[in-house]
Amino acid sequence: QVTLKESGPVLVKPTETLTLTCTVSGVSLSNPGMGVSWIRQPPGKALEWLAHSFPYGEKSYSTSLESRLSISRDTSKSQVVLSMTNMDPVDTATYYCVRIFRRLGELSTSYYMDVWGKGTTVTVSS
Amino acid sequence: QSVLTQPPSASGAPGQRVTISCSGRTSNIGSNTVSWYQQLPGTAPKLLIQGNNQRPSGVPDRFFGSKSGTSASLAISGLQSEDEADYYCAAWDDSLNGPVFGGGTKLTVL
Image 1: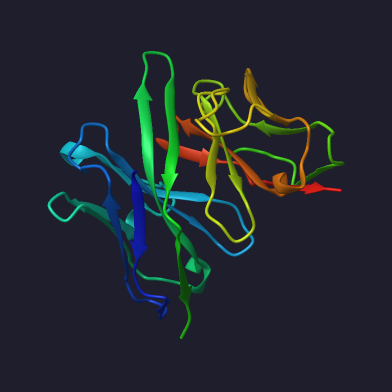
Image 2 (image 1 turned 135 degrees about the vertical axis):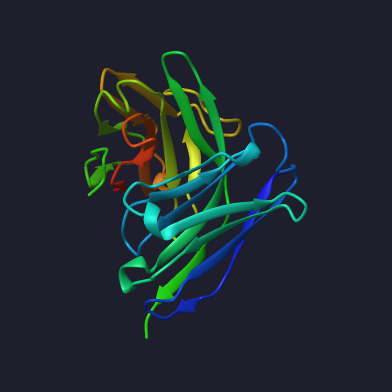
């Protein structure tokens, strides 16, 4: 059974850098196609994709947040880490770590999130 | 503001059928497959439909997904009280090079 668990600070101050860790169990991060995304959800609002990481160093970021985000993976620890700089109160949200399924077809891409962590709530306040 | 457009709310009585729409563009729904997620109150989202109309193991066949052009729909038949949740659609966007979500639809079972 594949599980993902988020960990990190509950409270960060404005302008600080947020670092979140996703610990993956039940599957190796080095498996081909083992993609992991970070998705967030502000209170009462919709889901927002932040970044994803695949094996062999493939990474991608939300265009609106790219300058503030960094994603990395440590296969030996089975962890995927997301950093977000210059935190602001509008970044207050629940942050989810999810496993991705992706199939790149000639004409169509199938991309979905099939296993979700429980999420970790981060509040940005001084 | 979400890239995919969903109605903010939907409702139906127990046993009825309800449909939730999801509208996008050629770069997302028009070109790629759609997935749907159910988020029960206070919990993480759960995959409900992938590949436009494929139900993962364990998802009841009361949930049906479809896609036509740049729009998709989620139909729920035989509505039950436990279906009361927020529902989100999503698809890969070729222009943004990332997945995009709808704004979510809050389903109320009357």
